[in-house]
Amino acid sequence: MGRSAVLLLIVAAGCASPPRSEVPPAPARTATATMAEDLHRDLFAFADDSMLGRSAETPNAARAARFIAAQLQAAGIAPAGDSGGYLQRVPLSRTFVRSASFTVTSPTGRTSLPFGSHLLPVPSLGEGLPLPVLEARGDLVFAGYGLSAPGFGRNDLAGLSLVDKIVVFVNDAPPGLDSARKAALRDPRALGDRLGAIMERHPAAIIVLFTGRQANELPALAAGLTDSSLRLQPSLEGPRVLPMVLFGSTKDAAALLPAGWPRNDRSRPLDGRSFAGKVDLVQDGVSTYNVVAVIPGSDSALAHSYVAFGAHLDHIGIQPAEHGDSIANGADDDGSGSMALIEMAKRAQREPHPRRSLLFVWHTGEELGLFGSEWFTSHPTVPLDSIVAQLNADMIGRNDPDSLYLIGPRSAPNGQSSVLGAVVDSVNQASSRPFLINRDWDAPSHPEQLYYRSDHYNYAKHGIPIVFFTTGLHPDYHKVTDSPDKIDYDKLSRVATLILQIGTAVANSPTRPLPAALLR
Ligand SMILES: [Zn+2]
Image (cartoon, rainbow, N blue to C red; front, side, top):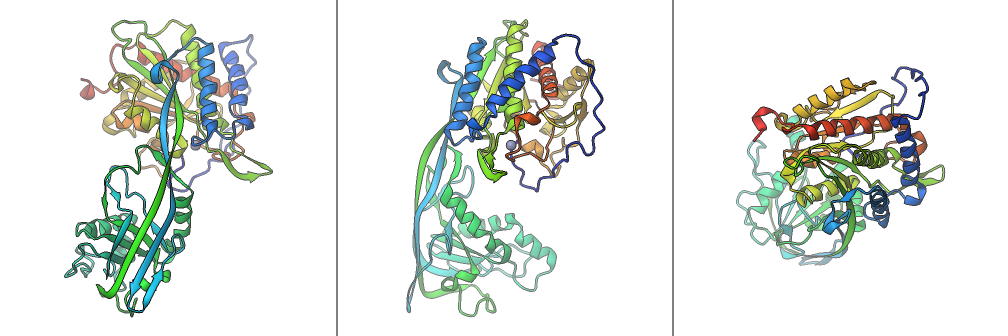
């Protein structure tokens, strides 16, 4: 499961749950017990320290992908990745700022503003937007607080000519505003509004100066820029037509501010002062891999459609050491879902095949930003509209033995997952030991934002009915202590069995699991 933008609520496992009831020993080796033994063996290997945390930008995720592919091959399960193999290459790119130079020239001389400590280039303003230019020069214009929208009692852009200029503004609220309007101006969206209004006037560059807490966060942002920023390719290729955008702090920027600031905050050209900036980016490619396999359907008319099962094979790699251990094993996240999918595919392969085909996708790069599922749904190896449902398993081996969270039926748009949610309930209720299904997290507005934090989200964006199964967060989430000895293998086996039964029910139904209004 990926990180949330909001603070993580740690669920104290065990504290609030009733004592475990003793489960009577099984009379013989049941299918569940056999599966639990296999899951135990596989997950101890998959989440072993030797896998070094399976981080997608390292060869360790490729090793994890090959581990899964080898198991599928041994079981005789058909590949469905690139060009007849199990793997699907997901190209990532990594961008570094190699160097940058920024200079202010005034009648009294030249001032250099060092990259990192004083000014930071913004390499991209967002997905799908053209890119900022890497070189800019021009006369400096101070644009106050950059305000031009009505309601703030001033228009900092009025009367200024900004074409081909280097525009400087302070991203704060002017004194004298009431607290509601101050808060509105400090919202991150207000920065986008200010940048957009200035860009419409075609400057050569925009320098945003921060104050207070936002200024204090700039060093961390600088570290992120120089380390790397991983994204799906193509990333920093494309037209460079937007002005250069730089971030800095008012306390290091006397050369960019008018005399008398902040007492005198009137916008005006900074007569006699000019600015020159140049940014040198380097980019290199990194390959990471999804694993894709298929169990062909038995009905010639329905076999060209698919029920997809998903998990993610990557984890978060090396982390700060705890008691001398720095390898994040990711046994629950998402070794549990990854190994469960292998067992599900093996069982489905042995049993009579359902009418529709079953597609198994182990996604990479989930922890970096759901990259593997974004790539798969934009470069699917089967037609995307032939996927009738996606069942995502991420962190399914922990917490109370009978508890299971379900996310999707209430969160996905247009009620597109409501019918699938009803299938989950009916299959669960028909089982010999149903789970207690908890829907507390199934709301797009829930502060944990779990609906947005795993791979199902990318399938839902394409209108595919999804459900996300998880046994929930715990104190070992994204820590080096998420280790295979803490997994409840009996529970993991029961969750895997339930998900396979749900998928099989959907795969045997001649109608797609969609509300009548959405059926074509
Ligand atoms: Zn995670």
